[in-house]
Length: 117
Ligand code: 5GP
Ligand code: ZN
Image 1: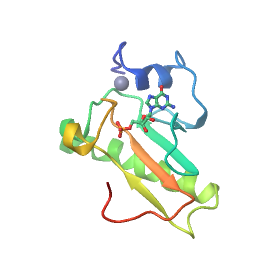
Image 2: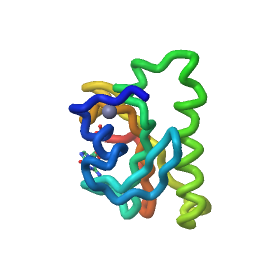
Image 3: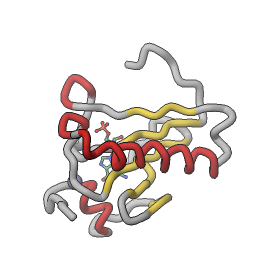
Image 4: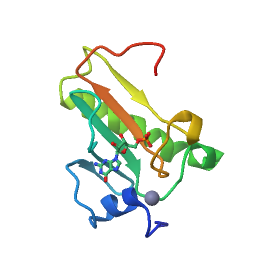
């Protein structure tokens, strides 16, 4: 399973850096964001090191889709689904991405606005 020894999210997935884990399976890990931007702010990542959506190919459809399915499961379990929530993936500099390991943000617990900042 490809990981990057210098990547903070690979280290979280591997247990080398502590995080509040909310979900783990063979492919995917979810944990609380260190600097939450909403009452619920969870990051869902693939265990494999993929830098961003820029690197996704057709064969990654299932792995990418799993991030959404895990986020939806966590939202349901936490009673957030009825009120609604936002899923965000930032890509690259102009997309606002700061950690170069693909991650899906689950944001909930307050009204989200549009357009995003
Ligand atoms: P991005 O801006 O790349 O879409 O989101 C990166 C997110 O990762 C940010 O919301 C930031 O707070 C979070 N983050 C960065 N470093 C760490 C860390 O070491 N632990 C955790 N739990 N979150 C982190
Ligand atoms: Zn990584």
